[in-house]
Length: 196
Image (tube, rainbow, N blue to C red; front, side, top):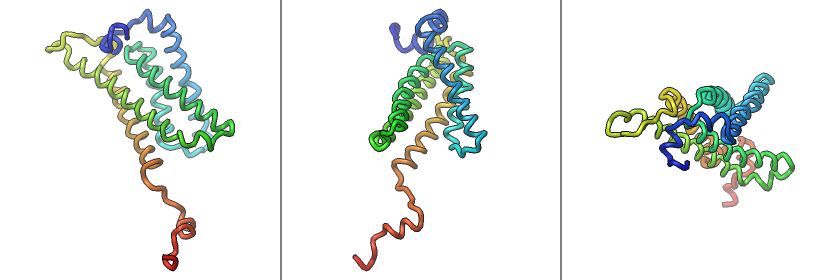
């Protein structure tokens, strides 16, 4: 972002995107979506009951990442950076959980979900900014935004809207609303009227 947010989001630097260290990171980001996608496919083939959020997120992310990488879009770098950051924390959490520290890291699950929601808000901002620049080109806005096509920015915005909704719904159901106990358990834990 040496030339500011507008240049970062609106100017595609092909020489940087495919050949430098940034290019290597972008290529690795695209490749990293393959195992996530394959894992989702195998789980579905085994009959595992995945949440809509899980398979929707992995399928749309896989398809869109490969499309965006092939197209070469300026906003791809920001989306990848946000995703790298959140996933590095999330997979470290999963590692610790599987390594026998589940009770130690469990309290952090809510914060990881909040990070994912924050990533979606960041994606909404980035996509919205690019679309605003695209829609105002040629008016009083003298800057251009040619680094991402309008169809790519629209598609990314729609994916972020759905993911924001789905992750927020998961957060509310998992951490805000009271959990419903099974009927038998509710009877055992409810205080007796005689004791009152």
